[in-house]
Amino acid sequence: MYDERTRTIALDAIGFGESLSSVSKRLGISRAALREWRDCVGRPGYPSVCPRCAGGPLDGAQYAHLLGLYLGDGCLSRHRRDVYALRIACDGVYPRLIDEAERAVAAVNPRRPVHRVRAVGYISVVSYWKHWPCLFPQHGPGPKHRRTITLADWQRELVAEYPERFLRGLFNSDGCRVANWVTRTVAGQTKRYEYPRYMFSNESRDIMALCQWALGLLDIPWRMPRPNALSVARREAVGRMDGFVGAKS
Image (cartoon, rainbow, N blue to C red):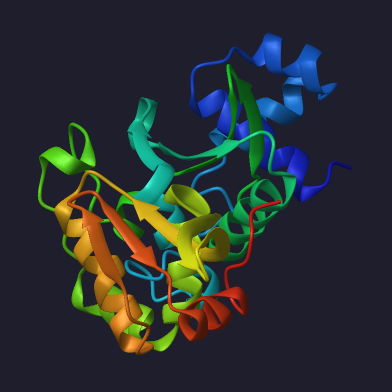
């Protein structure tokens, strides 16, 4: 008897073109079982639970977080049989961020396994599903900063409900908490003062505007030191963001 996770991994591999013999040897599953799973009409036990197509449930808080991650460091790529891979690129030096990205993907689509794929300089959190484009209609050819990025009405409603989670995703992907410093002359002596601030960088004006909008929902002041960089530096604002973003780890 094979568990659901093993069956899902096997069916994904077959769907992407791996032979029955290869899957059988790699996972230790009989070819007869693999053939039965592959040929079973409708794949009982694996109905579409897409929140957009089939009215399935959606964890709004985790989706808002995942949407921020996707807009920052995510992409969709099409594979065989119209299966899409959702990939979230994570810096390997921040294990907490990788864990959070994996939990967000798993919460949004709990019926599919989530994989970690190592690459040069980063780790991709990956999940395969035919319905990822339904949840991320921003998908399209080319880099995000070279095309229009707008949220659907239902996405804007979720972000408005969970702006902290959306901002956490954005800042976990393309943001950071840094120590800034300035010098002041006091009683004839130059003194250095340090203070924390949050920075968010993105080449897409549309994504930057979404970040500004979400901060506005929380009445968090920001400024633009550069066209592609946003700064949150006021002490009260930084303190509020520490409560739902924090330093990377």
